[in-house]
Image 1 (tube, helix red, strand yellow):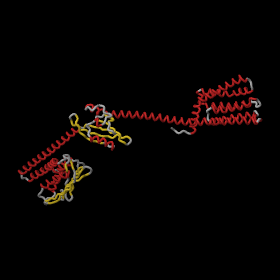
Image 2: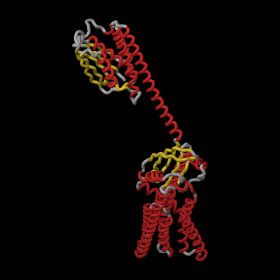
Image 3: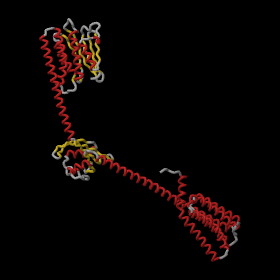
Image 4: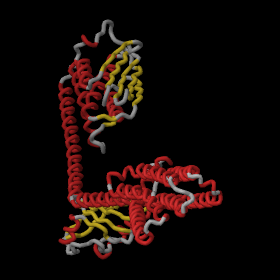
Length: 548
């Protein structure tokens, strides 16, 4: 709770001190009033009009103060102003003291009752009224002042022994009243602090109980949702404690256990008693999760209803206060998934075999076409016809090579371009074996699919063939360079160059109408690539493909 200032605490204490003293003030004032009335009646009956009796009846001036005090205590709306009312009433008592003292004759026999009555009024104020301590001191001082003034006016000081004796007793009783008030307030101050502390602790306890109750209700709701969520799982879920006792089983596993004759109620049973078919390895895995706090995933096969069931288990640690208190085991039947995976593998293997067979047959069919061309070329000795047959043969061989590489490759998706181009270069070189042309190759390891490799092979065939046929007229030797390198993030660059005679004057790639140039331009566009042919100390053709 908030720390209050001393002023606020004093105000709260005065309210507590006054309100808690109302019952005792009622009793004390009522008894005093009744005793005073009873004593007056008895004295009137026994002593008549003695001087002492006259003094006693004069002291009845204090009765209105007692009566009004009682009225204020019994009327609830006035309780908020009790301190002010009591101060005013006790100020009136000062007037009564002064009046009685002034009108008293010091030579009469009843004068001794005056100082006795003053003492009773003073000590009665300290005893009956639970107002602020300093207010009591001020009122007491005013009462004492009223007594002294009255004594001076009635000239009681002319009898020094009597005056000093009476004053001594009045001051003594005043001091006694002071200590009575001090003791009362001090005891009530301690009681107030204790009660305040108890009240604060009580409120804290109430709040703590409320918070704990809300936390328990929230925990129950969370556990209910937790159980509902686990019950909705199609997997089998079971939770074990450190003694391998079952804490919770979801509905799916309960139904399976009932069908298997293991009993529907598995909670509080031990793992070995409830699931006897679980192997020692699985039990050790669960114990290891308790020790390490790490998730464990395992697979196992069990026989159920004459069938081999493939299971995947996940052991999940449930940690509380940095310690694994429970382990949740989630088991999934993956038998159908395994069957589907096996079927997919068989289908994939079958498909791969069929693709290899297709590539093999395509290669063989292209080989037949090449043989037919060669046979046809032998029947026609025309050099131009022979040249056309050779060009067509090389183009078909470049395509057949792709299918041969795919047939022999373990990966049917990608063709290693370096190996493919080396094989293609070997065929072209053997075709033009009469020339002493040195071929230099710089080929990086790049793989491409058949849609990229086939056009690239045809382009390479056309460029190399042109170099062999036209770059070195009148001489039988020269250098041809073939480069293949990566370009950008996923593309490549192919460059074919020679140190031959170069291109004829006025050569323009766009205006060329030969079949070879047409094939090169068409295939470069098919690859979304660009081609650049320059002639400086020979011919250099560069094809850039931005993506394989």
